[in-house]
Image (cartoon, rainbow, N blue to C red; front, side):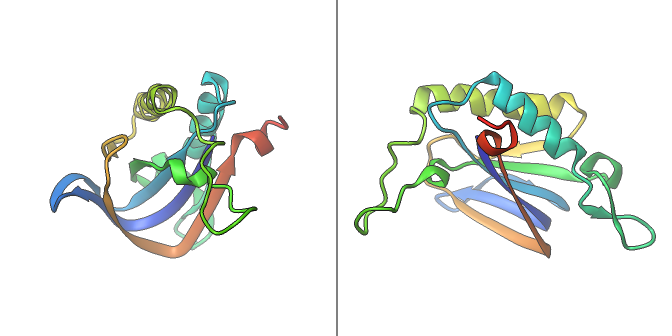
Length: 151
């Protein structure tokens, strides 16, 4: 599982010009899965995101988690996070999970974040979406379960 987490002032996702999810300050998460990912990967990354201290406290130090900062999450599925560009010029997506399995893991991930008391908005899995992110910092963190869990 790979997540690109961007701290933001605001973020939104639209489909055909219609808003399907939006947040004010918090995190915009671009979320992708590979065929090796399991519920263990999802739980680990969800817990890691909830606990990341990447929001400023009163002393302007990154000491607060998203919960402590009162932020929300916009979670957007993105199978292209597993694009392989080693050969040729056209990316290969053979490392990406099947849509059926990725959809289940994506729903589980969002449910786990919401279970932590966070407001979680989403895009539409598998849809062609326009994502608008007003990055704050910019602070961008890449989390990869394969690396973090030593798989």
